[in-house]
Image (cartoon, rainbow, N blue to C red; front, top):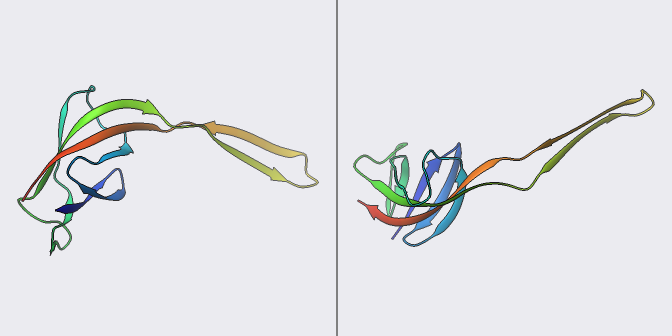
Length: 99
């Protein structure tokens, strides 16, 4: 059975024992998290969410993604701006889908 969850403004299709990387969630590695924003589970589709369905997960690690370079330039105006950004991410393992 699979589910579609929403966390961090993005949607993920998950099944039991999947390991995914999502936007930062609060908690230490080994902590249990419960995701209640389930859009779809099995064959049922919510409008927009399913009530009574939860996805249980365990935090594997907290880390930062690779650096993304933002470079702006306007030609012939001597205008250059360079910035870098590293997003905080959480790796979670889906342990169960409670329907």
